[in-house]
Image 1 (cartoon, rainbow, N blue to C red):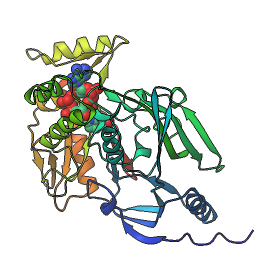
Image 2 (image 1 turned 120 degrees about the vertical axis):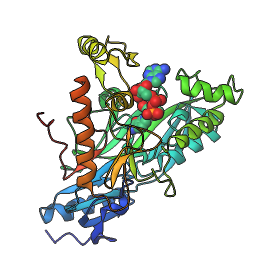
Image 3 (image 1 turned 180 degrees about the vertical axis):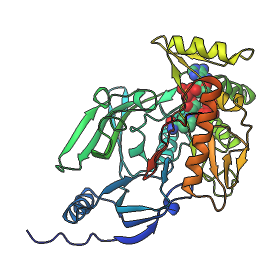
Length: 362
Ligand code: NAP
């Protein structure tokens, strides 16, 4: 077999800090951006020939990379393409994995399509959304997703998974769990409908709609409200925002068994945590409430890292911060919350070459 040619656009020692919204992380030994499936296959073959580890990067908005970097090949998937296909009373939206998620949401809202408007302003690429079943304000991609087309990295086989086969859960899927690192997502298909969005149930969003006197908002109007809310919490990508260098929410909201929730109610007294009942009898508790009640105010800081001044759930890397500091601070938050409430927070971002470790025995 002739050697695999060097992939076009391959670079060396690429600073990962420039590809991650948190702005930390060392260099990738090798780095390549691919816009087609053929380029992706070539990169995979080239890496295999050299025995290199491979990591697939989307928008970098939910990722913390080690300060020592990555001693392998980072492939940034920018496979684009957007196609709308009318089917009965639905519009199928076929989107390349490298499309920017929020640009897709904007286009759908402008076309009067309903089903993803509450997911406005979420950073990252389309291909990253199925991984953690991205959701906000009561909407999740799993509700409108029809299928995910993937390339199996080992065999180069292209497969399609239905929504059911994706094994979606709260901020999770098979791609994040049992098949982590096995597939490259190439394309995602959604089925959206025309008309007005369902009435939202989130109090914060309802208040924002009421302030605009919008009783029956269109998808575009709901999008505008969501963007305003996210901006007020520094949850929009904005280089000028002092809270901007973050991964968005650093912790997922814990979902507790009924017995665990009862224990929390006792430990939290005299305060009463806000909670939302799940259909299976469990209770979802806002991580932000637990963090604040454990003693961390918005803007709490240690050296170059801290919490956002607008949202307790965001860990911010200020100028000069390292990934090690980010992770150490997040561990400190997790351990303090556990000591106070007996609830263990799980990190939402992917860690590359870093470990969140087990809770420190205290
Ligand atoms: P928030 O609106 O302050 O809500 C905090 C918590 O309350 C979340 O656990 C949220 O559940 C829950 N909640 C509020 N109203 C609810 C209702 N009517 N029914 C059920 N649960 C309710 O949260 P935030 O941090 O500012 O974020 C706003 C939205 O963006 C949230 O929905 C959040 O999940 C979402 N978000 C998603 C991602 C992601 O997918 N990667 C990242 C950041 C934020 P839910 O979490 O189930 O909504």
